[in-house]
Image (cartoon, rainbow, N blue to C red; front, top):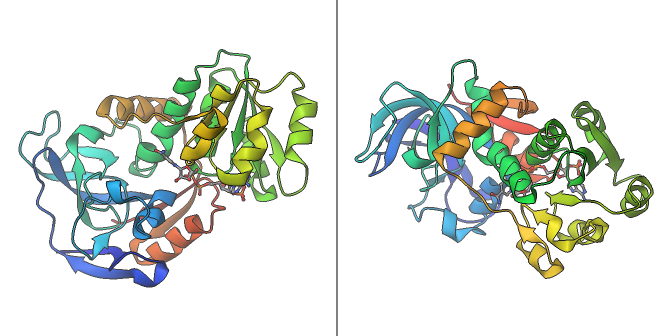
Length: 307
Ligand SMILES: NC(=O)c1ccc[n+]([C@@H]2O[C@H](COP(=O)([O-])OP(=O)(O)OC[C@H]3O[C@@H](n4cnc5c(N)ncnc54)[C@H](OP(=O)(O)O)[C@@H]3O)[C@@H](O)[C@H]2O)c1
């Protein structure tokens, strides 16, 4: 048995609850882990609200929140390759096991060993934000010297995109509110405060020929405001808003496999993808951790340290 935090039905924060659950049995292709650290993501509250039915695993309620974690392998299901009991690992809980818990199951194909020298706290942030940043930039494929705009640069994915883009030799512009300026500038970003200036006017004055690529983390009206700044619509990649296709842009193509996790871990070890972790909460404080992200203005990555 172990403590877990999740939700008793689809809804808002009122359906959230702590409960005890037996250690889940790892199914075919899964590993049971003792969770050390769980990453907190916007997807978690979207799943709780019932807005992402394809990803919720269809498990009975109460369900456990959380999609990513780092921890130690306690048991292997059938047909697990490349992982052993006792390994320190990080990865995705794609089948609905949830990671805001003392133990959970991860999909082995979407789980990798944590390399020596990388902390569990950093590793826990890589499956969602880290690999998304890698995927978005790979999809854009911009050469060194090109200019990129990161819309929503201050959050978990945005800062990762900015750091990675700067390391690839791109000129990086990023939008965020004033509290995000310092972290963004430390990542090499020409910061544009969308609460204090007109983003379109500022960006056009900085890059009159147009932006070579946009990675959007905000969506909605904000995406529609910045998209025309791109020289070509297909170089607008949104990570959260599928309606980007209506603008001629593309939704991010995700690779959740072990190879991409290993690649992101190496980038983190190299200091290129070092996440900015702004809050570490104990499991007992999980409601506050998720509330921070749910408000929509989180800075960097928020994690839950379980053990
Ligand atoms: N497709 C995938 O596989 C995938 C993977 C990861 C994330 N996502 C999605 O990508 C989005 C971002 O994820 P995240 O983890 O980076 O979220 P996050 O950590 O919550 O960060 C979002 C950031 O956007 C900023 N923001 C909000 N409104 C803005 C605006 N109008 N203009 C500029 N910035 C604004 C927020 O702070 P300020 O307003 O204070 O600047 C915040 O820093 C979410 O929708 C998430 O679901 C999708």
